[in-house]
Figure 1 (cartoon, rainbow, N blue to C red):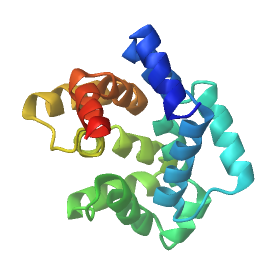
Figure 2: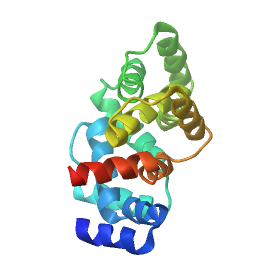
Figure 3: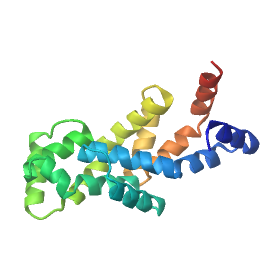
Length: 190
């Protein structure tokens, strides 16, 4: 279904939530999520087997954050980071929090990894952190609403993410919002 199909479906049903749910449940959307995660965490395109595997996992309900943590925690990502725990921590902070690891964070996570914490476990902790949630909400607002998140929206959606709501659910909600809908309508008309 192209643009005409979705516009007709929206006008026919009037249900933005159903349309955004269908769009964000599509194989095309899952493919986009997997490819983006591979580029971010493994710095390459997804190979056919990996693409198929993760698209299947996402289709069966695996959260996108779990996929991201598994890619970041993989041996391939570890090797890209220099194959040391300290290098991995630095790389994970940069990729997830978009900043270098602070000295205390570097020491803490390196010691945790040295003591047996899994890289995937560390990755999911960073991905689900408040700092990461705020960055992700800001990125969603910029991408979908072409503006910075207002303080209330940033707090609300960041809290949702840190409480276990998936990023896809946040995206669906924003796409179904009046602000997005009327902004898209203005964009198509103009």
